[in-house]
Image 1 (cartoon, rainbow, N blue to C red):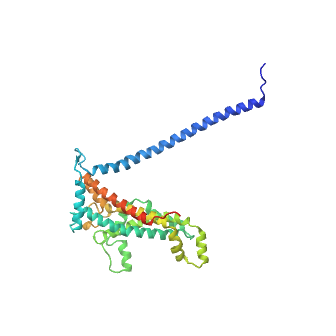
Image 2 (tube, rainbow, N blue to C red):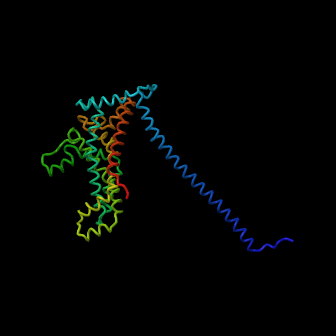
Image 3 (cartoon, one colour):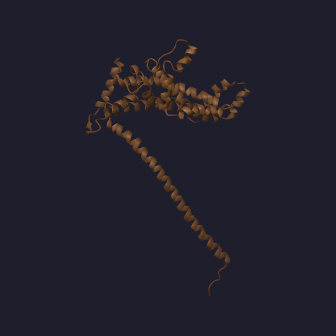
Length: 329
């Protein structure tokens, strides 16, 4: 005799079937999402390996070879590094910049970094402090200062070449304060590097201002309120609360600024030209590496000089982070 089938049993069996179907659909959906994610990540990873890690490793390999891009590569050991060392020694002994171009680029870029990095960091912090105030038109102010950060450096350089002309707008404004002072910024070797540094400071301060502004807005308001109750004014609050709380961001901005400044190429190329301008005043290490690779057709020497630049950036940023890194308590 067959067992009677109750309605409740039919309901639970149907529910179980529906749950199985839904679980299969969910598993398929998760599988598709995971596959899509892996596909997107794999494209970025492949590009990073080809144009990042492979290019870097190939530069290390190339620095031990002599090559002209056409014929076979010839192993020369440390010869390319010997050429680099001779360039540096000639420069230290006072040779003309034509005989020691890499040393000239190193000397210029160190001075450029010492001017640009502290100035842009301080200026970005001050601009962020103003942007953090509740004043009328602050959004327009933020956009105005951030605009250079998203503008092509070549276009900025071309505009500033016009502004830096002997009878240009900048000299006109300077003469209102210092009558008779009108240097030829672009064609005078004593002012060319400072002109490039000013453009770099103007172009990068807005970018770092946004980083400082985000960090400032995360500082607890209670600290400022307690300081105000103790009678601290705006300047004392900025010095004793804002700056210490911004220390991790200051370290980040200085490190990023150093990395960018030491490998500066675009501004020097446009404002000083491939030869570095009068007396090589605007010549940089990145310009010299480019000349060796694509004008002198010595990619091995260019790779050896790139290794020197990489070591300089790595060591300087490592030492700075080691000394000023904020250890969480």
